Length: 389
Length: 106
Image (cartoon, rainbow over all chains, first blue to last red; front, side):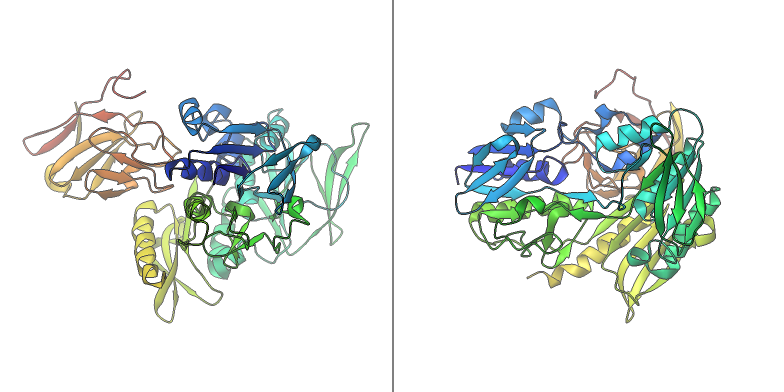
């Protein structure tokens, strides 16, 4: 393999590029990113970057020295528009194209949006540019913020806006947010953090539409499906993401909630692998930071080998910081697994709970208990190891 | 010299954070005491809460690992070292000498 193109210049793409060089690939390496920025870390965008305690320079995932060592051609501000697998060609915007032996698909995911026009003051949060635009709307004195979606991004944005002194309401369509991730009991405990900090959480109601007015068509409110109207100066929609696969339409690759690949990140074409949010690895699409970093080394190993010689089955792990509480979760929880608090107390917002199925632990959740969490996370990972084949 | 705690209260494998500015983490690893800056250079997490294995501590948030002897990161996502601080024991009490700001690592 003499040339590899990594399509996507965020966490998964960068880690894939690192893995290529670390595993001895010394051919032509091209990294294509639609954003104009070098790889940066997204998790702080909803947290310390939004509150202003972390600056843009602290988000960089690679320093100048490492960028030089990677010896890659960077095509930033460039969108991949198609993949011609027969001709080994990646089509780029502006009519350009790129011929390559191997392809790493790392195009990530894009926020789901509400239907209808997007008035000024209405935001989604995925990219650095998104975060800068949102931050600009949050630094002109106290405003009324409505966050649509009570998932982790929504909760973190609500927390950051509260820390900045804004009046915040969170709207969640489900009866309770975070149930798919945490189950009813623990979702209830985590969702209570909003009320702890004076944030109103409205559940069980969808959004009908955004109201806007004035010459600037600035957002003025959020009309709920039940008819209520919430006045708003700033609206942030955090209702999940969609894998960015539109550019692969017609490529022949199986697209089904992500690029379908095997447990080694390999698509039906051995010279094409997928990593990160866009990859549906062995039936599961993971949107976690740690998965993106771990999948890259495995997928690259398989790409260079020409077939699946390694698989990835690390324990899913994610964290969220909100209202001064660090939430950490690891494991494979299924509906019906019973959480049991092993230490601390949910009332104090400081505890560790293990999810159990048939008396065996399946997952662990901690609020402000990083140390025992790590112990349990490691034990779970060890217990899962024999399952690897 | 900053008093940390009694040596008897920090058994092998344990760590403690002292609330200096910036905070310092003190580890008792394999019969040796080490002190490093407590905050991971990657993102805000306390290394005193990390996983201690030999002379290495793994950050509890993203698994960046630092060598306690040098403060140097041994794997990603951290790229910058944490500062190390001299540790002494006198009369069974652990003390840390806060390294000067212009100290070991940038």
